[in-house]
Image 1: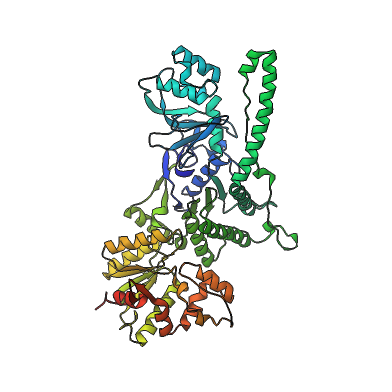
Image 2: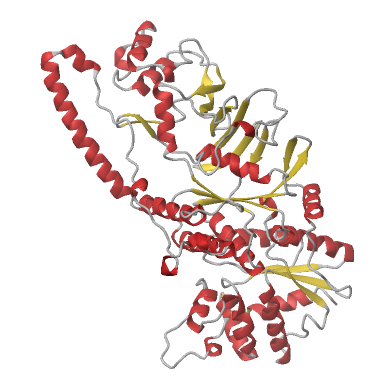
Length: 603
């Protein structure tokens, strides 16, 4: 299931009910103590109540009652659920979705004791008609009695399956008077429904910036637990087969027992139905950890090292999910990922988050108050949290909010020379080397007329279109009254490919000269002759491979230095060779034509 929205009321700084949309990548931004971490911790309480537990002191100091409310709304819920043994039903059939067709689950904690216990409600568009509003709370015998009292023919339902009795009862009414209902999960089939749904809820993993160190430091242990859960998910068919075999054989034994009982007491035997109460928990049987050298506990290493391990867990997950496009739905919640990390590592982590969020298997939620990190985040992911007395507000999505974020955090545009006549927006610092060297070589052989420096077109790395730094840079361009153009990596063959194409299409629709590379990224164009490979080497690159990683591994070079090290060796002839492509029988030269178009911005 996918988390679409969270609602918080009376929890810490959130007094009035605050609705917060959650996307694939969601970034909470604001000053210290604005209320960013409270959202992540409210979700931890909702999903796990483990790393952070609900306490009496979590009640907002101006709350008008003692109830803390945390509500989550989900989409992509299962098509079928089983609440009677081997007899599936659906959330729609059981009238358990809200008016918007979402699964809405509210957990309420009464802050009258030190450690409040949860009460669970399913908020749904449910029947309120008399004799049809309480069916999920009735036992099977009570459902049969209700059906009999309503003169529903027994042939209209299976008397041994609760869901069919409910459907027959609801079908007997002309109008069900559906209204928003808080259905308490406390008995009979409401409990069975929720127990089933729990197995489909996303795995929520919270990584805090200030967690105390323990020998079983969860900053490292939690990702490994997730690794076990994901491994089990990939073996789900085999595990289900084992569970079904055990279930079928056990139920067969129980049924044979009841047959013998029926010979002695038919009435008693007819009242009894074999049923498994709980599902086996395989994940608790496997424990995975990572040892440091000489058995030194990881938590005894520096905080930067511990979080660097965590960073690379995310990077490994991003690569796996990008390649496999499968696995459990996981929500990674990361508080201040910039803590104890070098700026280069921060950028790598944001890239890992982006890759994960585009995989279709994961959602990323993070907090930050660091301008450098905030500037790299997509605008549609931003949630600006602001303190308003003893309450909080969460805003998203408007020009005014972007301005407020940039002002509050001090996000600055990339510097542009006052003499600049135009701007070429590119993704990263290494792209400056790529563009400048390519233009210089192509001009030297007469394939283009000028370099960007000749025409004073500034090359501005902005980390990708649609982020805060990009927005600030365009503000500066408007103040200078200069045009701009855009070159993005296509990320061909990855989950981001279509998103980049859509961005370029939108820009072109607004009259902006904008392109994506035909291959995945500039590193995919590196001529093999520039790598000085040994004789007989079978090393090769294609349009969609992760050339940055492949070259780095082959040449023992840092990924961030591939273009600076090898692209600068490219001759004009080699550039022309790798940029050549066929367009319906016509030979065309990608960068020669693209750069000519960019340069035409300036007479």
